Length: 181
Image 1 (spheres, one colour):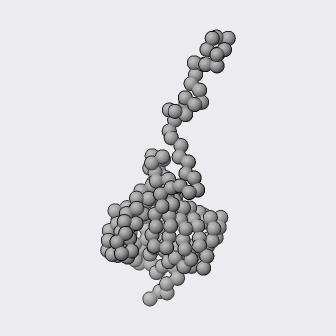
Image 2 (spheres, one colour):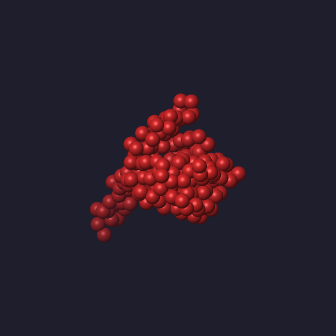
Image 3 (cartoon, helix red, strand yellow):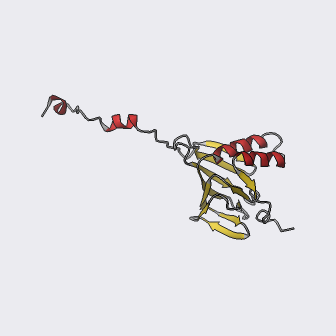
């Protein structure tokens, strides 16, 4: 046994030393994370991409009862996933309607038209993924648009969407809960 081994020291780095050189691990507690309010929806950013090399963004959203959600839209540069934690969220994908309950995952690839809404009288909670993370900044920008009188100009909203390679799906059905014209 060498002196280093006997004294508890070793030539190889300890687990603690290895952790110092490893990438930082993000731990976000239940009352932590950036909060973004958009109308009746409260979003809590759990991962903004800074820990994942911008490969993944993650947010928890609480949709108040009877929240209509955004118009149908398409993303050109990112996948978006929705995992329903509680409640029921109605997803409209093109002309198809899916009522997603707790435990359901909805994955939306680039180019697929979609929207969501809480059409029930109870809150709904979902966790959303964005790969890559670029859409987290979109929600920050949208929050800033709402900061004035709470109703942003629709043209400015579309310009903001386009900065993140997202287009309204104007050729498709209205928001969930709206009647076709």
